[in-house]
Every structure is written in C-alpha cells, then in structure tokens.
Length: 195
Image 1 (tube, rainbow, N blue to C red):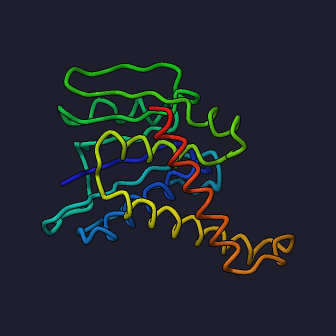
Image 2 (image 1 turned 90 degrees about the horizontal axis):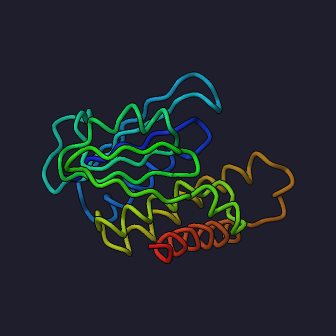
Image 3 (image 1 turned 135 degrees about the horizontal axis):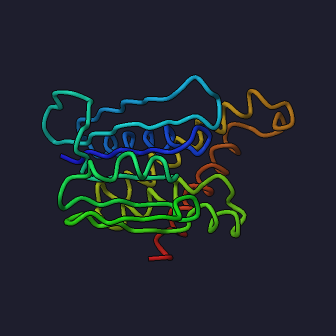
C-alpha cells in the first residue's frame, strides 16, 4: 500500500496533484482513495489531500503516517515531515521550502520545481514536476498509468477553463486535450531529466 500526502497553499495544484495520483492508481487497477482538505479561501489558504493506492481493499481514507509526502510550501513541510513513516520519501519544492530537515530513516529530495517550471515557460506545473520526481524515485504506478492520468486530469481542467474563459472559445475539445497532454508530458519529462 502506498499512502501519499500532498500539501501546499491553495492555487498550487495540491488537489490536482492528488487527483493525478489517484487516477494513476485507478489506471493501474488499484483500489484508491482521494481525501481532500482545504480552507474556504480560493487561493492562498492551506490545502492538502491524502491519496492511498493499494492492491487490497482500503479501510479508511485517513492517513496518519504517510509513506510519501509532496510538500509545495514551508508550512506544509513543517506540518507533515515528522509524520512520514520510517523508510518513507519526501519530495519538496525547494523554491518554496527554503528550510529542510531530514528525520532519521526518511529520504528528503529537494527540487526547485516552481523555479524550473517558470524558467521553462511551464508556470504553474511545479506540482506535476514533483509527481514526476516521486514516480522516478518510487515507481508508485506504471509509466503508462501516470502519463494517462496526467493527460486526462490536465485535459479536464483545461476543458473547464475553455468553458469559463471566452478567450479560449476558438479551441476545440480535441485541441485542449492535445495541449494538456503536451504540458503534462513536458513537465514529467522535465522532472525525470533533472534526476
């Protein structure tokens, strides 16, 4: 069983990251839970989600000792780092988490995901880079499942944006899916290349 907590500020794609992880698990035929927690703020408030991927039935979506943590900001890192189980892994956006600690028995990997994405013209995809890094380190699902889940989730969000933003009206659903798939693929490839 893989238990992952994704945490950061609202607007960083924390819940989207969790959805991608859950979708990847489903693509691999695993039992999955996705349990979000967030404040009432649209952006800037705290947000986290718990994702469990298992070959066996899952008794509860609650995770108290995750085997993995994706931390997108300092308060999230500080809140969850001591809960990660021994032998667990933490993937951290060091562009947003300047102060790292590494508890005994826990592997902490820092990658400046936000900065890397901004420099590469992929602003807002730091969450995807961190998922790619977690996958490269743990192989929590098959590569095909991760590619499919990333493309599907990003395409769904892009479709919502198309319906809400009149400036995107000229794009067809197929074009939106194509753009979303390329963005997700680029971000994952980018994370793997930085290993």
